[in-house]
Length: 264
Image (cartoon, rainbow, N blue to C red; front, side):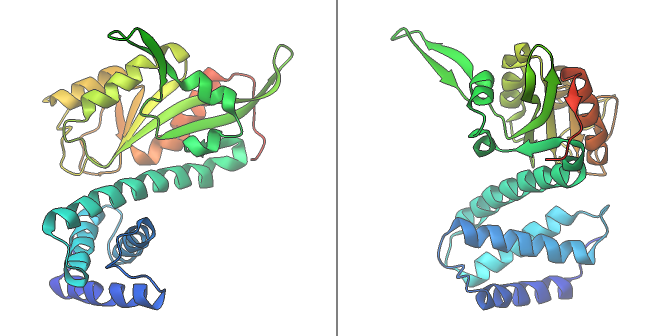
């Protein structure tokens, strides 16, 4: 099911007015403006459609229509704004969903900034690399969008904070599946679990029986791939986003067997 033309027109008219009431000027290119525009747009679309409907396509149409109407931006600038804002929103939505469901059980999803209090974990997740031309070494930060943390305790370590999983978030792939797999493979020796969360908006994963190259790579190098698109063909490795909480619980038990289910 999709929105009607009249519904789209109404949202394109009312959303800018609500933003102005909040003191937000869309003509000024600011992260806060685009973030509020996309959050308001998705909230409105979700209120009109079922979860099984193509919410993101409708949100993109309205988001881009609002910017085209309210600003003098060129089409490429409007689309780039959508790509950046939708990626950030999706990542934030995944993190917040995990924390809302699992923080009471002692599991916390954080961005890189959330590791400032745990420099030892940040150091652990850095990957050593070497520049051959100048023979110098450096530490590279992988494609770690969301880190999964928990508390653990044992006679050998005492009480500690442990990272047990990494999530990479992609609204779509656009040839980036290989990059995501590279980082998952490069971090394999850490012993933690790697998952990828995608909207698979363009059905780039196809089917298990007739897979695309991205699907075969993701099935091979990630512990699990979660899709938010109900039209994606599922298999043992590619599961619906609704199963992510149960999978994260299993990962914690595998990686941190002495975990503590203490609320954050």
